[in-house]
Image (tube, rainbow over all chains, first blue to last red; front, side):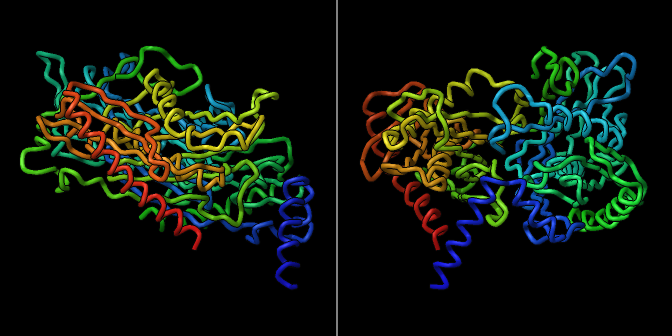
Length: 276
Length: 262
């Protein structure tokens, strides 16, 4: 009798969650808890696997709870920009396809994907010194395309994407390349691989203001749907603030922002432990 | 080589970039046995993980079923949405649609973000292979959508076979009514010898490739594609061998699916 009672309660709860997702979340927030039982400042378990993809010159898979992203870096050679003859290229793109979540449609990148791509591209400028990608000044340079593909979307894709990008750049191994000025051809030796110098490591932490009520760290999809504002804090390896990005109409108080920055500093060592 | 079109919705790199010329010569794949020391009729080891990583906190927008499939170096991920509202409200049978995409870093050259015609062709191949196994008459007015992303590819025919197996596992995970699971396997002809489940290097060194998708319990072949030059007798023999390989792959898929019930 107890089993059927519990089973019936579980089904009732699932139905309530489906039909009234907002009310469902409010019941938990009103009791000062999250629907998964996490603390308000608790991040989900993080797992990083580097170098699993042999077709990519650098790769990393990041799992943050249910959210899974894969970052693969392909290296090609190109002519550098006339205005910057010693600099290579690093382009980052985030792909949010219908595979990861029913919220995305097939076809051109959605607004969310474009915004994420643009912001991560700007953050990636801190990662590498592009002149280290030069093969021959004015003639040849490496062009790295970092593509971050989201396989499963359960909230907080940006954090996972930034960590995946940093891990993939650290995993990246470029073959030693030589430019032949007579033929204009770049030849590369796959046996001689070298890492690139990472200028600055980035450690992200996203906080979300749920339903104008409370700020939670690392929101999952259900909490993100009720978000009225979000705050991304990016730290470098020395605890200095690299980026602070607040989106949304909701108001986050100055004290809350300071608390988030403090939490992000702790989060930095949590991530560093996993990356090493 | 990347396209010369600036995609205005993505971050673009330089207009033109190419792969460097690699000086290290690739090893001859069949010189002394196969490079990964497999037998000529041996399929690569398969790993399947279905379902979400943490079933406790599942978002409402999560897929009904999903599978992550590895076969040697091939990595494929599939998500199934459905049965959900279909496009036609008067359809007596459900519709099954496949969407296939190579990740830009999945092949030895950099792929475009925009779907190319071969990806659309493969999507149609996947639809034709798997649709016969689904009891679509049990889902009128509904649509079942499969989205497949190849994370790493190793042999074109083998990757398509892996995608078919991945969809089968994901459909079972989604609880869609099936007549049977579809298992697929590929072979390639090297000289006079058919070799099972070829990697990209082995496929490049062969003259013909064969892909067979089969429902073993019903003993029905749902898809057959031969590409290259052979004789009818060679093809007949290869189809038999490949069909047996499909049964072996089917046993592996079933074992993984059974393990999720325990």
